[in-house]
Every structure is written in C-alpha cells, then in structure tokens.
Image (tube, rainbow, N blue to C red; front, side, top):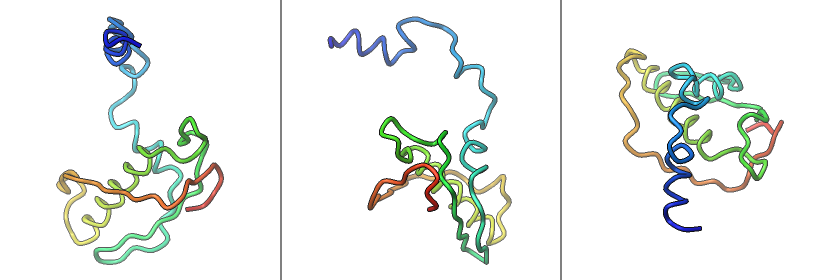
Length: 111
C-alpha cells in the first residue's frame, strides 16, 4: 500500500466530508461502556466495579477492545476522584494511562 492510500484511509476515505461518526451525539462513548458496569463497592478514594463484556465492545479478534479498556480505566479513575469530594465536573483529565493486559477477555465474560 502506498503512502497516499494510507493518508486517504486515515483522512475519512479521501475527502468524504460527513460520516456516521460525525452525526453521533457528544459523549456517546461513555454510555457504550458504562451501561455494562456494576459498581460492587465504593468508599472514600476507591471504586470497585465489574462488568459482563457485551458484544459491542469487542475488537476484530472478538476480545475486549483496548480502547474500551482504557476508557473504562479513565472513567473509574474519575469516579474514584469524585469519591473523595471533588465535583464530577472538575475531575480533570487523565494525563497518562498505562494498562497491562494479562490475557484477552471475551464476550459474556465477567471482569
């Protein structure tokens, strides 16, 4: 594949100005992930959760998508910050997220 083809692929199909993604509402990603999460325990500075992996969060290898994992880590981190008294609107953003996966997780598996 030549570089120009790669560039066109990365730039919305080589000039296409609208897509389904452009029509999505703001913050659409959070409900995709959080609708599967159960909060098992919450205390000052700590949130413990579990989730049964839905098919919508799978990658092309039929395991939990790395982006979904990172988003889950980010949102649970923000929830832990909120649990110590900060407003949900002022928790800031993650500057760096490092996730080490020990094994793949598949659909309907609880994590």
